[in-house]
Image (cartoon, rainbow, N blue to C red; front, side, top):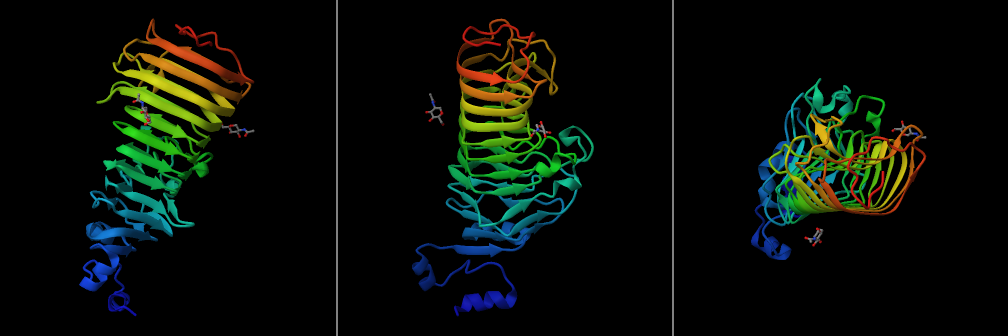
Length: 368
Ligand SMILES: *[C@@H]1O[C@H](CO)[C@@H](O)[C@H](O)[C@H]1NC(C)=O
Ligand SMILES: *[C@@H]1O[C@H](CO)[C@@H](O)[C@H](O)[C@H]1NC(C)=O
C-alpha cells in the first residue's frame, strides 16, 4: 500500500497527498489530487490544495456554511453520501461554492438533506423563524452543477449570481413541505447573472420553480415543476439591477402549481423586461393562473393598479397548452398603458378554468 494512504488511515485524516512526492506528482500530471473530506471545517481549510474534492457524509455544524468559496480554477467537487446541517435560526447559506471552471456533481445516491421541517412554520421569509438559504452559486463562473439531489430546504434552494453557469439534472424535492409549513422554497432564484442554463430540473416545492429577478441570456429547458408557483420572471423592479433580457423558457411541464407562466413587475418601479420566450410548456392542475403577466406588484402582492416603469416588450408565447383547475383563471394580463408591446402569441390552448374580466391594456397579438 502507498505510504501516504497508510499515514492517512492511521491519523484518520481526510486529505490525500496534498503535497505529493515528485514521482506521484508526475504520475498525476499536476500538483494536487483527490481529497476526501468528512467535515465541513477540513473541507474549508484545505480546499485550495485539492483539484478534486469529495465531500463525504458531511454533517455541517449549526450556523455554519459548508464553505467552498474561492476554489482554485478547475476544481471538481463531488457530494457523496448524505450531507446534513445542524439547526439554527440564521440566514445561511448552508452551502457556498465559487470559483471559475468548477464542476460540482453528486455521487450515486447522494443526498443533500436540509431537513427543513425544523424551520418550517408556514411563514417562509416573511416572519417566524429565521431560515437559512440553501445553496449560493455566487461568482461561480464558467462552471457546471450537475445531478445534485437536494431535499427539504428551510426556504430558497439555489441562489444564482454568476456568469456562464450550467445547472443540469438537478432534483429538488421539498414535497414534504406541502402539508408541513414549507414556504418560499423557490428552486432557482437568478439575479445579476448572464449566460445561465438550467436544464432537466425536477422540482417539487412551494414557491417559484424559477424566478429571474435580473440578468440576461438565460435558458430554462426540459424542466418539470410541481407544487409551486410556476416559471416566473420577476418580480422585476426595486432592486439594484432591474433589467431582464433574453430569457428562453421551453419544453417543460408545470403541474399542481398556483401559476404556469408568470411575469410580474413592481408597481411604481423602473427597469425593463425584454426578449422573453416561453415555448412548449404543458400545464396541469394550475390553481390560480395558467398565464399571468402583471405590472402591479408591491411588497410581494398585486395591487390591481399597473404602472408603466418596467415595460415588458418582445415577448413570445408559443405553444402553452393544458389545463387549469375549475376555479382558476386561464389567462390574466394587467399592463399599464403602452408598457406591454411587441408580443407574439401562438398555440396557446389552456382550458378548464375561467376567463378573466379584469385584463387591462392587453397588447395586440395577445389575448386574454
Ligand atoms: C440569448 O441568450 C442565448 C442563451 O444564452 C444566447 O445563446 C443568445 O446568443 C442570446 N441572444 C442574444 C441576441 O444575445
Ligand atoms: C392539484 O394541485 C393542488 C396544489 O395546487 C394539490 O393540492 C392537489 O392535490 C392537486 N390535485 C390533483 C388531482 O393532483
